[in-house]
Amino acid sequence: MGSNIEVNDTLNLTEEQGFPAELLNRDRHIETPISSEEFKGKIFPFCKEDARLFHLDPVRVFLVQNLDGKWIVWGHAMIQSQEVRKRNPGPNWKSGDWETSGTFVIDKIYDPEFQQVATMNQSPPGKSFF
Image (cartoon, rainbow, N blue to C red):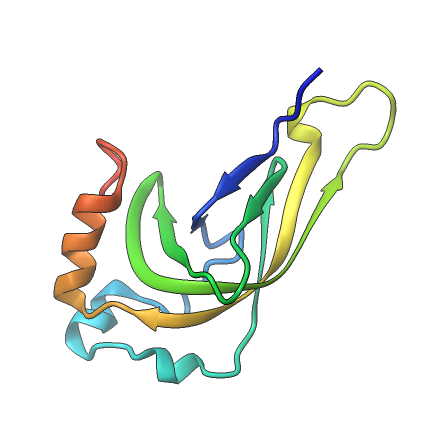
């Protein structure tokens, strides 16, 4: 017997999973850099498949936008809450029957130039948006 809980230091989200794409837009960020001050006090929900644990506030996690499998590293988020639950109760469960949900705040947004460098250096091979 073993456990399949993954520990993450990266909150990698699609828009469907909770990435705030309406607020964090790369084109807008290049034109007029977005500041984390714009999000002060705002809490964002997320939900991801499988069981995983994220570092909790005050430890940062990297906030990554997942666009069709390509990563854009935006900066730092702080996890405010998290819950791991079984989506399909019953005796015959499998790995995909679990999900992790929670909330986060945005602590830091990288400037556009650093964002590009961080994305190129922190993304797995072939996953960088750039």
